[in-house]
Length: 321
Ligand code: NAP
Image 1: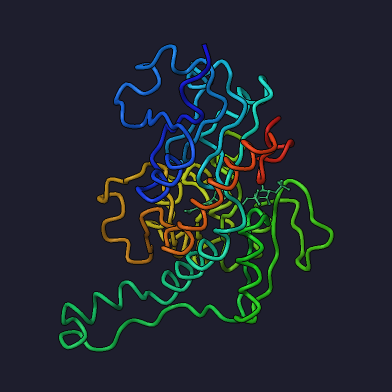
Image 2: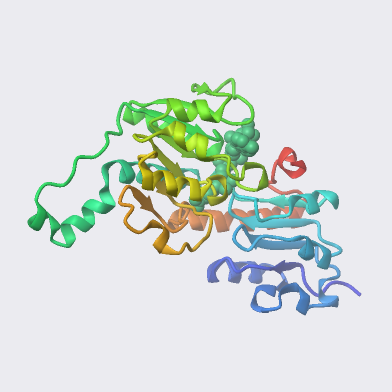
């Protein structure tokens, strides 16, 4: 029996994307079914392509349910929720949406750096709630320009963050598993040494088991009472309990966090911490970038259907990690 469907969609990527995909292919919209792929039987047998998102992920049991699967096209650049080992074991290609979101995630990293240092979110409340009139002068904050910026993970997004530092006359150094000789920034082989050097430490590396709690208590202590930690990567990279304890005791100066260990977070954890600026995991969430990400998923599906190749596959090194 030939397959009744071309593509299985385990996550909706918005009405516009879903309609365009369905206009071109016979799509099984498995995301509509609360039981997921388990609700389907023979329909899954010949399916070669799956569409998902980094939020929804792609697990071993999803791979197991799709015996003919050849490609997974995911929305988002992170692959910590995609079981790459399971994909590699069966020679299944996995694509993500790199490059198109770098600018927006880097912009948000800077928004958080500036907000944590200059207290823009606190100042906004100060004016709107009448505290300016009641209390007078707003407390002095921390200078950003001409300071030292450390970046954990000088990848696509890390580089975009580093490039923006030129406009702020900042020195930049970075840490990752291996140095990048062509990069015009100094390499620190030790993350603790990078943190000790930095005024601002921005986390921009991959998430997942290998980087879990890379930013731990010693790294946070090295960043110090005047230091500001910014995380736009994944909540799992930072030991959040250690960061919160250091923020409360004054051992860490401030933080700007787009991503947290538990999302959405119980807000009470951050109560009273005006030195922390938070955003609800929205690094790529602009109209322009979200449209570009959806387009790139579609381009990957089209290219795979046409040539059997993916346009933006996860690198072989990451597939084996
Ligand atoms: P990328 O180009 O692959 O860069 C990842 C960087 O992480 C590389 O510099 C890599 O360097 C480093 N790295 C990997 N494993 C490491 C380890 N164990 N220790 C230290 N460094 C390590 O990825 P990207 O496109 O810049 O994206 C980075 C991450 O941003 C994504 O994985 C995602 O989790 C996050 N992100 C967040 C949002 C948001 O909404 N906040 C949006 C998009 C992406 P080496 O290989 O040399 O170690």
